Amino acid sequence: MTPMADLAERVKAVYASRQPPEESPMLDFDERDLFDLAERAGFEEIHLSYEAKTKPGNLEVDARDWETALRSAPNPFAPTLGQALVEALTSEEKERFVAHLRPLVETGKRRSRDAVAYLWTVKREEAS
Image (tube, rainbow, N blue to C red; front, side, top):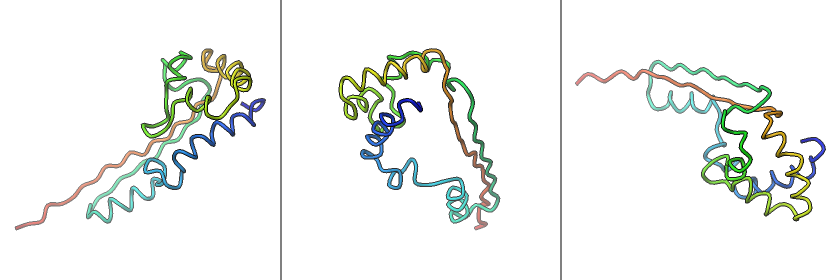
């Protein structure tokens, strides 16, 4: 997205304005917070593993469909990509942005990022 960095920043700003990352219940915690919450809940044995990866292409096999990409949102509280483009860009800017982004989506020539935390615990029942 480097050639479109200025436009991409404006599209990202739409998402940030709707749900500031520091206030988002989906983004305002990390794996350490999950661990601490489990510990405070009284679990005696806590295991957490964290995986993060980046790779070329799409993580989802069906993510190459442009119409699907336009109707997709990163989470239930966020606008779709199509809505964000309309809100952030003029018609001419949107046309330029789509001309750059669409081939990247449809050919899988982009980088995907994914992170997941696996948490499992054991809580001993108290004897009566």
